[in-house]
Structure formats: structure tokens, C-alpha cells
Amino acid sequence: MSTATELHPSLEEATEHQPAVRAALAAAIAAGPSHAYILVGPAGSGKRAAARAFAAELLAGGADDPEEVRRRALSDPSPHPDLAWLRPPGNQHLVEEIRTGVIGAISYRPFEGAHSVYVIEEADAMAEESQNALLKTLEEPPPYAHLLLISSEPEGLLETVRSRCQEVPFAALPRDLVERRLGERSDLPPETLAALAALADGDLGRARFLASERGMRLRELTERCCREARAGQIEARPWTELLKLAAEVGKERGAAVEAAAAARAEELGKGRDADRLRREGVDAAKRADRRARTATIDLALALCAAWFTDLIAHAEGAGELARNIDRGAELGADAAGIEVAVARRAAERAMETRRRLTVNVNEELALDALFHRVAATLGES
Image (cartoon, rainbow, N blue to C red):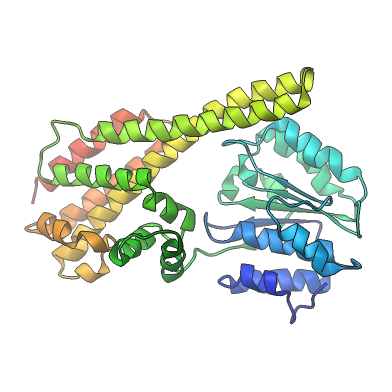
């Protein structure tokens, strides 16, 4: 393996903007890796790339041809027989896949070299049953096996799981990096790219969604809701279109999850395992639909809060601090005559509604209440 001062270029590149992560993984390689790690941090902060590069280093250790091992391990999907990479088909890992893909498989010695690596992407999407089943493996793993858990929401993991893993924290990506990466895949105007990067809060995945057709539509609908609330014109209830868009996103995600589970069941043919996969797939599809729909509404509420916060910046003559950089004219018009304290209360109401969504309140009623309250609040200016 590489030494702590001579990391392989692939791991250097994967942790380029995460110096603390680079130091932690370098130390792990130099001193001898632990049996289990959990890579935690905001979505889009590079956890997946770092996990793959780290896995490649673990597998390359002691190999006759380490570069060839790295090449295969770094491929996605990887053909390396000692690298298992599990992604949830929807918003939750299938219990059977955790049992067979990790718990059952880990007892087999590596086909090549001295190590095997098991990566569980979106580990917080494991059901409690899966997490409890994984505990024994985390407590008593074979000496040759290493588990890498990746999580953007570690609070979704049992404390008993987290305590058995060495934590590697990731920071949000710098805004200029998100903007640059976004520009590599998009021909949007520079001002729009800058705005999307600012609104993404260091989350490259969120920025890319906002740059998509549905993301742009979500942003337009959200701004319409905010602007009509500012004008006191909410009789048309514009947020119903926002809810329809969120439902479309959820339905599409759920269908993809169910199709993926059905395809895996088809590979097994007939029998109890295939039937179980199909049943779990249907349940997972429902959860994926719900999670994607809620996440879309949550993003819309975050955009609402950003809009009202930007009103504050414009009202105080500091429009250059606004995140909606490409909406200066609209924000300037809405900020005319507004009181800063009033705009701040509107932003707080949006954030309060975001928090309420986590306890499964009715989404339509929540948005209805939010924009009526915001319209009343902004009407004070």
C-alpha cells in the first residue's frame, strides 16, 4: 500500500477538496486499516469517490500487480471479485441483499490478494432489521474483510452500528467547485450556474438536479409562490403545481425502484427468494416514492427560505450577497418597501415548515398554511 506521505494519485484526486479526509485515510493506510469505517457528510461532498479510491488501495495492498487491481476496483461497476458494492434500489436497502451480499458473503476468503471490501452506499437507508443483522458482522469481522458505510444522514443509523465504525467526516464542497463541476455538464449562463451553486449549499447532486428540466421548473414554481405571496395574490394556490411536480418525481422514482427489484427477482427465477425480492421491491417502491416526493418539497421550501433571505439582502442594499444571483431584478422589485424583520419572519416560517415535514404532516395543508401566513406577514410591509 501507499505510505501516508505518498498516496496514490487516485486517492489524492478523490480527496482533493477534503484535506481532513485525506489525512484520515492516509493514516489508516499507513498504520493498518480498521475493519469498519463510516464516511459521513453532506450529499455530493465526494464520499462515494473517496470510498472507491480507498477500497482500491485496500485491495491493492500486497497484490502482485497493484495497478491492475486498482484499475478494476476503480471501475464502476467494478469487476473485482473482492469488492462488493451495494446501492439501495430505492429509499431502502432490501433486507435480503444485506443478508446475502454482506453478512453471508463476508465469511468467504478473498478470491485474490489478502483483502475483501464491502461498501454499503446510503447506509442510513438500511431498515432497522438490516442494521441489527449487520451488528454481529461489525463486531466480529474476519481479519481480511473491511466494511465501508457511506451516509449523508448518519442519524438514520443505529448508535450501535455507528459506534462500531471509525467515522470519517466530510465537509460541504466549496461553492466555486460546485459551480465549476456544474458547468462541465451544463450550457446554462454563468450567472445561473453561480446561482444554482449558491442555492445547493455545497451539494453537487442538488445543484445538478436544480440544473435539470424538473429542477428548473421547481425553482420557477417556488419563486412564483413566493412572489405571489409577497403581492398578496394567493387565491390561485400556486403551490398545488409544486405538489404535482413533487408527485411526478416521486412516482418516477418509485417505478424505477420496483422495476429494479423485479429485474433482480427475475434473475433468481421462481422460488421464495424471488418472491421475497418482489414483495420487498413493492414496499421499497412505495417508500422511494414518498421519500423522493418529500425531498422535492423540502428542496422547494429551502428555495423559499433562500428567496426571503435574499429579500433581506436587497432591502439592506447588499444584493451582491443574495444567492439568487440571476434574479436581481425580481428580488429588487419584491424588496421595495419591505421591512427586514418582516422578510426574516417569512424565511423563518419556511424553515419551520421544513421541520414540520419530518413528522409526516399533510404536505398540501402545510404549504397552504405556510403561504397564507407568509402573505399575511409580508402584507405588514
